[in-house]
Image (cartoon, rainbow, N blue to C red; front, side, top):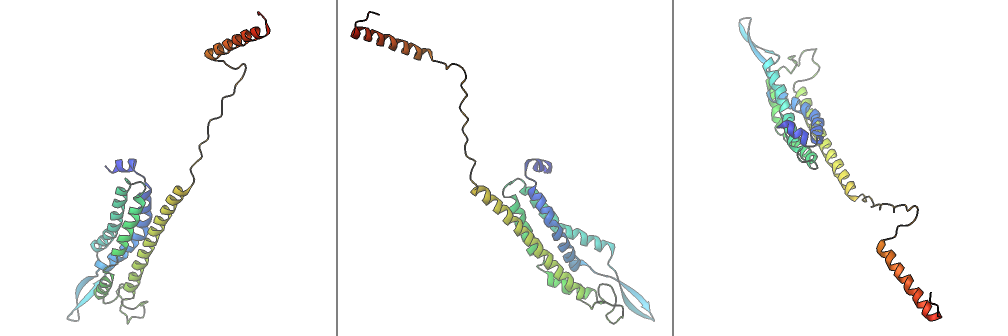
Length: 223
């Protein structure tokens, strides 16, 4: 079924969706990382006391982050495949879908940012703020990730709007452009003796006889 859609419809919506998927994927990657990333908590016995030790997130969590980042892209590509059936309006549908996804993506971003900061009490690199090797304070990475998601979402919206405006402008120019004037075919070239219709020739012959007879009566000529 998908193969039929590709053969029958225009591929422009799919191409636009592929372009918008670049920024949308990275925005989804950062958002999903803020939403579900968590360190591995290990209980270790140190000096007779149980100490919590934080380690990097598990491979399963990393896989979930990448899969969730592909969800917005998959939705946009699915919309683009369906929009291929609508040749002239398919690009508008893809642009509208990209704008809607970009607006919904950072909806709970503030909540995810605060929750991610609480999950990593020793920051994302698992180094305490009091350590001399730390380069950023706790919560700074989360704030930068939040700003990155918002920036990429804005870029996606901007590209989608620009694509829709370009398509609308080209359609308007196509309608306003004058149509090609109709050029009549040149008359056929006549060579040699002109062709005379048999009916026309008979009429001309009779008119000559009548003129000759009338002239003979008027001037007394028998011929």
